Every structure is written in structure tokens, then in C-alpha cells.
Image (cartoon, rainbow over all chains, first blue to last red; front, top):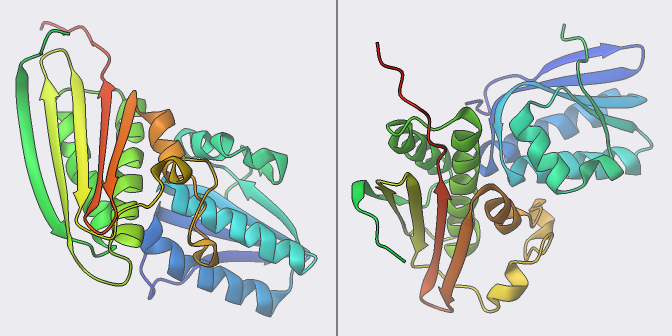
Length: 112
Length: 151
């Protein structure tokens, strides 16, 4: 489980900021993760923000709140937003909320 | 309906610290693992438990700390019954709370999908709540019967 002390794994390339999330995303972990993503986003001001979920093993609706919240923030700042590599369990939650109507979900994105 | 024999049960009580969300779902997974569920069934159960426990912590007890009670039963016909109970503030309008995307806490990016996730991932869900006294979420799921491989 990630804690506040664990730095976010990020890749910034040609204006695209990719944040690689890891471990479990629930209500307990979401708060610190969202603050750190927002800080990165405000500092870097990328043209696109990608949340790569390939390292996330578990996510509940708190993670859904985290994703929708980042989408809203990114849109307000004029930043394109994408989610990449959700596992099947995460995909089920995203589909349940009809997330794909708002957010582009990319599977099989290359993991660095 | 014929009452099925209980083949195992457990009771758990823990304080409403958010760190215990992961603890509760790990316990639920460990309890169910004895019955050899599929990976998808286990994922669904873990997620449903996480939602109900988070509700107890975030909405039931809000900024206070109280006890969250989790009981689990497995019957011989492989139905797991999970009850998650708090003695928090309760829900004024349960029907409203069950609506998808309904949340009393949008500022903290609550998605309002907790009960919807439970309803979809489990076979049944019942919410019993008394304002000022607390909330009880009861859910069941029947596990697939996997034929035993004899060595």
C-alpha cells in the first residue's frame, strides 16, 4: 500500500505527463494520491495527463472518484486526460459508472 | 426456503480508521479463500466489503471514531453472507442513498457509486438504517461450484 512518503512514479515527455499508480486505491490511499497528482499537474502544466493503472491491483469507488476528479481538474486547466491499462476488476467499476462516455480509456499501452 | 447449514463463520470488530478498509477486505478474502472461489468472485467480494466499510467510516462515523462490525458466514451450498454494521449517524433516506451517483460528500470527490457497486458485484444487498443509531449492510453471493480434482 502506498503511503504519503512514497514518491509518485511519473514520466514527462513531449508535454505528456504519465503518472503510474501502484498498489491499492481506496478511500484510505486516494486522498494523498490525488493531492500529489494535482501538485504534479499544476507544476508541469502538461498538454495531456495519463493515469497509468497497470500497477494498481485493487480499486473501489473511491478510485473512481479520484479518476473523475482528476478528469474535472485537468479539463478545467485545458489538459487532455486519459486512463491507461486498467485491470479487469477496475474496468468493471469504470464501466459500471459509464466512465468511457467522458474519459478515454486505453488498454495495452506500453509500460515503461 | 430450506435453511442451509453454516459451515463456517467469523466476527470482526475494528475501529473506523481508514487504514482498516484494506484490513477488512483482506480478512473477507482470507475467509472466502477457504471455499476456493474464482478470482472474479474474490475481487467482487473484496470490492463490496471495501465499499460498505468505507461507508461506515466516511458517512456512519464521519469525523468521529467508532466500532465497525463485520460478520461473515459460509453455508454448505457456498453462499457467503456478509454483514457490515456501524453505530454511527444512520441514513435519513435509504432509498435516496441507494441511487447511483448520489453523495452527501461531493467536496471530497465521493463518487456516490458505493451501493451501486455492491448491488452489481453481489447477488443481494439489503440496507437497514436508523437515524442516530447506525446502519447495517447485508450482502450475499453464491460461489461457483468448482469440481474437485482428485490426485
